[in-house]
Amino acid sequence: MSDIKALTVPKWGMAMEEGTLVNWLVGEGDKVAVGDEVAEIESSKIVNVMESHVAGTLRRRVAAEDEILPVGGLLAVIADDDIPDAEIDRFIAGFTATPQAVSTREPRQAAPAAPSGGAAEPAPAPAPVAAPATAGGVAESLRQGEDDSNVPATPHARRMAGELDINLHNITASGRHGRVTVTDIEQALGRGHDGHAVPRDFHIPASRKDDSHVHATPLARRLARELGVNLNDCRASGSHGRVCRADVEALAQQRGGAAARGPAMAAGLDEPAVVETIPLSGMRQTIARRLQSAKADIPHYRLVADAEIDALLALRHELNAALSHANITVNDLLLKACATALSQVPECNVQFDGNEIKRFRDADIAVAVSLEAGLITPVVGAANRKGIAQISNEVRDLVTRAKSGALKQHEFEGGSFTLSNLGMYGIKQFDAIINPPQCAILAVGRGEQRVVVDDGEGAVATMLTLSLSLDHRIIDGATGARFMQALVRIIEHPGLMSA
Image (cartoon, rainbow, N blue to C red):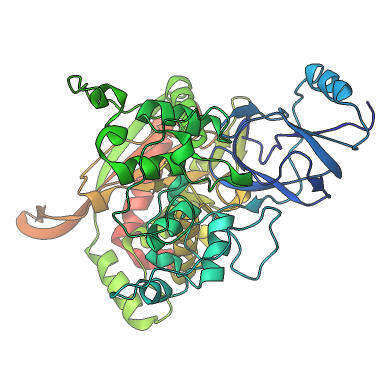
């Protein structure tokens, strides 16, 4: 039994409590070395590639793809070839998940994968095929485009694109978190379920054979039943030759008609109500859990103020005209203004874990970024000590990598203050929920021209409504008001940011 080793869900970051097995990269019977990539695991925010910390033969895959397990939960068993199966069974039956310490190994990002020429992957990539020869020059149109290294894609899809000289900018993504999959590339090439190039309107006749023996993921098998798709008809583009969800969806979409509409309509029954059941992703579950807890546990109060931003807009225009290496936004300037205000009112630059207050010298400010799967808040560290151009470039880099799933764990954890801006959607004012252990979050609406009264006379000014949510356990009303007063003053006199 001592020669049997467990592969378990790692703990990436203090906040990680569970992970979703997205994809196996090795199969039963494969030899595994220390450092080999074995699986893709989705934590609450990103998908990471898990590397094995032990060596041997992967004797049993215990967890199925799309299964959610706690940190320390059993994924697979690694043992020597001469260990009897009965001992493996006893090991699995007696295994108990135990919490792990935070991993000191930096997890490798699963999206986007390394460009062609990077580290080799354990699972074989699909064999390259020739694109169909068409009058429109499909192959050539798929090759053209700017650098695609930042396009989110699965490791296999990126390698396949490299071998076929395809630019990922030209592929419509349908995978998890907006990633390009092998199926997406095959559809762009017009390949059929047998892997050969076919016309776009190619129709695969429905099979009536028993598909219980077809190697498929549990999710794909369940979806095939719901859509009336026979797994014998599907291509198998998943890991280790399995039919995956994307394969079933691709066939249903290609056929249209009965398979796409489902068994009830195929039988000639009245059309049922269209209801889509969407399981919560790991990210959405974490967001729901944390915000519900924050709303229930933190006594929020809010302060609202208007700020005139004409001087701020003038500064932005001046900086963008003078600096060729930056494209400064109003949000960049507001982030710098918040950092300056936090330095002036340090009582608001704090975290509270329910037992003790942590007050920070530097202002580490999180920026709310909307993703298809939820919300993530990358952090600009020590913004009070950085110039506006540096902040602008750093925010742009963080947002780009957040949307491609390539942030590192420490880049979206921590922070003492959050800036959330919905002004670009035309929202005038809103209230935001504090992200614990932070104690404040600023909600920013859109700037708009309003008639204001100055010394008894009317004038037109560009105004911005700010709504500050604060934790009343730690920050009193007068303290929050002093911060808001300082922030408005800095926004209206932006030269104070460099004073």
